[in-house]
Length: 351
Image (cartoon, rainbow, N blue to C red; front, side, top):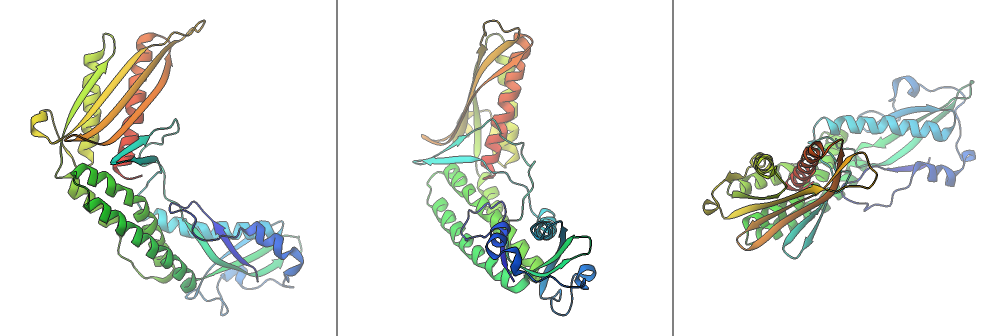
């Protein structure tokens, strides 16, 4: 029997050596598997005495070749995991942040995804074996793959232990920060690892029925607690011909709603707050020779400051096009707010 490991989308990085289905098939060769002369009951009942449901998780696949059949069986098996994980875990999407000294700097890309639009995926399906193969008279190949529940769960639990250690270290670093906002942004770096831990915990629960404490809920509660102690003021600087005052109100409203959503108290009076978000927006026509359209170049920057320390910063620079200058200006502002609020919101959630 060939041991098969498959790689999925891993939020924690690849810490195991994974062997793909194709590689195993190429190494073992098609001549090494023995086909059954008659279909087994597993094609209809899935489980039997040799592979009982309380010990194994099984799936069946069919294809024109053995490789295709194995791929189909793994697809069915992965759907079992996906359905379980997707039904119980919040949605996150990865983004980019780097630490430069004590400041967290966020980088936007053209492909920034809307908040909450991506569902989680099963991390790994490991330790699966092809336990049965049957070639039907019509040439179709059928296979059954099986995962030993306890053994696979133990492998997941080892990964969970490492994630627990990583999260504990990040929580310790967060507590060492002297700035409350710096503590918040440092701690949000633990959320992706907590999410990975939750995904594995859900798979362990599906395999064994054993529950594990949720690191994700713990980190989320701590972040909410920190945010509830922060009073934040907004300082908006707009440089746009003729439309500056109107755009300033739109920008203030958008960012006030964002910070409210994550538990911060937002005020207009800077004397009442120990922290502030300084938002700068610039937009100007950018004529293109021979173009029948109106073009606008715009910049938006955000700095989150507590006392004299810049805790986090974000910068965006793009172009927008429309039929006339006024429409191009409005499209530029909408695009800037959509990208900036979405990106900063992702960072506030540690995604």
